[in-house]
Image (spheres, rainbow, N blue to C red):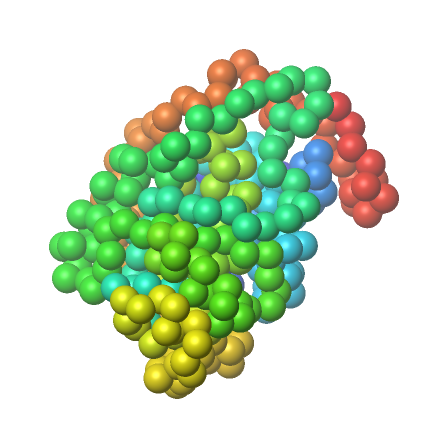
Length: 301
């Protein structure tokens, strides 16, 4: 059922590759939410005893390329219905031997290697400088780590993700470079999503699933040799078919982890205030565009 008047929710799940549905269709409602950046589709339902807003990052059926996702519309829409906490899932490649395929990662840092993405709500009329030393909410991360520990999950409690432009995957040389930059995993979508949420004073926790060994580098300490020699783990060289095959197999784990985090989150959770509340209120008071304005690239203040 699709309606235009949104319900309210304090927690949201943003589904990454492979996670396009979260609820039974008969027990949820889909809302078209107009924003200053275009329309975002959000589904509201019940999960783990909570009212949850769900937004598939790539759209239904993986129709949105990572560099073309309307991140600002998605995040503004969630903030407009009262979301305070976001649990996001993501498929990632491992560029460190300590992060092999099959492990979950509670990401704590990112390195931005994207280009040209609209990455702030404060690009006109008000300049706000976001403190981004710890981009993922520390309290939500502690809740996620405790939840995964209780589940007995195979996971890494920290991890630095390098966010690339996409939609292509890495070359071997790039993969080695990312490891030399102290990255552990690689992804195409966690920037600017995380900082946009922080700009509207929403907390984010990310649960990444390592599907592959990126460009297939053999896990060793000899980075120069890895760049020169063919990978010994060729079965883990990233491809779209490999990623989606492993994501399908991992869906029960990912959903079980999301449910555990939802259950561990207090009803009255309040995130950090990283931007002055008056500035956030002003950003959320901007007039929404209709579909014709959005397609024409018209922005209202």
